[in-house]
Image (cartoon, rainbow, N blue to C red):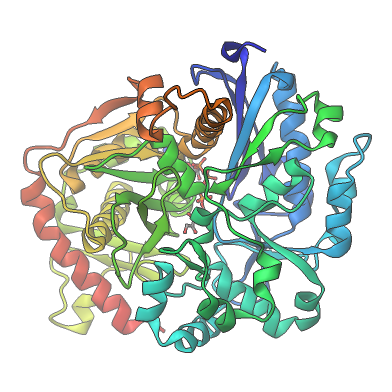
Length: 551
Ligand SMILES: Nc1ncnc2c1ncn2[C@@H]1O[C@H](COP(=O)(O)OP(=O)(O)O)[C@@H](O)[C@H]1O
Ligand SMILES: O=C(CO)[C@@H](O)[C@H](O)COP(=O)(O)O
């Protein structure tokens, strides 16, 4: 096949949906399909893509739901006109930290998939030893976090090795909880996958390796040596190195597509599979973020991402192995993102984003001193649960004043207080992580809520920087297909060995193919610094009050 007729397939298994995109050689969209877990797979009874457990802060998903979604999304993209025989390489992105525990029989089935049957009727519950896969929203592992940190010599040491202190959603503490509470399941587990490597495994027809970039969200990988840390493995659970397998760089071709997909969906047997990675890493690849850029993903969770040349030893936030170069990526994750905005849209704006935007636009910057923090489920940064609304007279001066007001008198005040509070939180943590804001700072927004210009104007004002968007709000999804094309080009140039120049760096390769990929959509108002420079101090006082007064 001529390389100009080749296509590249990307997947994104995020919290609420499984999406697929097919891109041509110019990285233009040829076909797109998605499956929404709540509405397309109601039999799994998810809300926002997840099941709520009986224990406090327990969230899980049944892996079979994701497998059924894969059957459906492939059927849908074919119906959209995708000719899958043209796919030269595919890759994927998935929500970070979740873990899947393969049984021995599950791996056997994976290696011998029958093309006459659906995937989900073959890879059913028996394929996994744990039928309720803990996902990133779960925060039931406080004890395991403490145990792992103290076993390696404290939080600072954990940050030094893995780029992050222990967080309840990180995979190491989650694995340790399974090992402690369900020892038989742990013993019977042949291999453990992340959500990204699990999805890759299905295409490969065997357990796929975990990539070092998503692997750095586990509290198990040494981000400098890019291998599992023996200290962290020992602090987590026995026999783990074998169950995890050897990690590989994200830019690795892990094999060719399994025969199931060749027979059932007409893929070319030579279609290569590039290691799948975490959604935030894939979003960084999709946005092709260079220096001076701060990437802001407004998806189910909100995340702030930046390129780092050296790992910072910050206690808060995460340093991950960069997915497309030799450096590192800084990541800050905020659990209360779109799901909270969704709640306010329903309660204050007749469940309509246009109304929500009108209400937001009808209030002045600074909201007359009204500022709110809403951490409806326990937040990651800062680690607080609850809501606090301050007006212009509230302060730390007395406990009564600091408790704030119950609710503001108007919906517009409620909405602006929410969005300004969210964006001030993102900015405060980005500064703490070491991002230096200056004249050249630019914000690149993506994710579902980046379609909302009114929200982006608040972002621009709070950060005092211009905001850009890409044509697509699906950076993680596109990043998967971009990486597939780039890694295949590198591999082909190595295979040729003809002395010709390879494709160069990922950044240059994508920038050349997509020279006009970003559009400047908002500029900061002239008084932004004056207004938000001082509000940030009030924001900090509110966080201190919440931290001191939480149950
Ligand atoms: N016009 C809009 N304004 C604000 N938020 C929006 C708008 N359209 C979609 N969203 C938000 O986008 C969220 C989904 O974002 P998305 O990036 O698709 O999620 P995921 O994390 O599953 O990839 C929804 O929960 C919704 O709140
Ligand atoms: O936990 C994190 C990052 O550390 C989350 O960002 C998950 O990776 C979920 O992503 P979305 O589905 O919200 O995009």
